[in-house]
Length: 271
Image 1 (cartoon, helix red, strand yellow):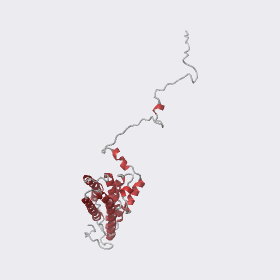
Image 2 (cartoon, helix red, strand yellow; image 1 turned 135 degrees about the horizontal axis):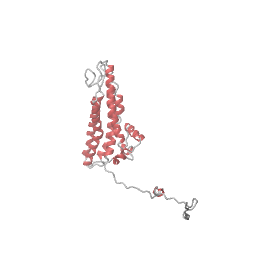
Image 3 (cartoon, one colour; image 1 turned 60 degrees about the vertical axis):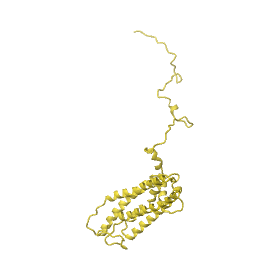
Image 4 (tube, helix red, strand yellow; image 1 turned 30 degrees about the vertical axis):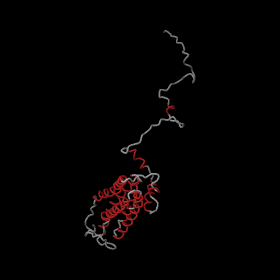
């Protein structure tokens, strides 16, 4: 058996100070962001209106703010809603959910009123829910609450009036329809005079709210004839109120409770 002598290498030393390990994972301390600066920042240009990032600020609103902006539309005040409540910026979250909730309350309250009327009338015919009313509610509410303010804003921009933005116009119209949500629920009551009073109150509150906030914008135009657009706004709002009453709040029992409805009804209690 042969023995080979191996000389000790002085490069390897015993002890903690003699051994050194090298990491191949990179310098983690250098890549961590420091509080004093040195972190990498990514510059982002302005997002286009076709991107989701463009609309995110309009939906960045808390629940308390949305609730406050809803119920303040029921309180007639002399101050402008735009400068008082839609600050620091108007949102689209509240108007969208206000209009969407109104659509479902209109359909559900109308369906419930139909069931109650059929039950109190001792009708042997089964209740057939009219799902076509849901499509009518979607078209009517979104057309009035979204399309109309956009068209009015475009018309005013064409006339040289730039006192408000399209988001503010949608916010005013959307929040202004909040009063119809509790009214549509209360109109389940099968008493004609009560329903007419409720519709009249909702028309007066929401109509006053719209005129009080739209007329100052129209008055800022150089052409005095622009102020006449407020008459068109009032007429369209009256048409909306009458459409709600006729299409969704006209279910009665055969033997009506209270004074008769001024509009004629068919034998089953429906217009």
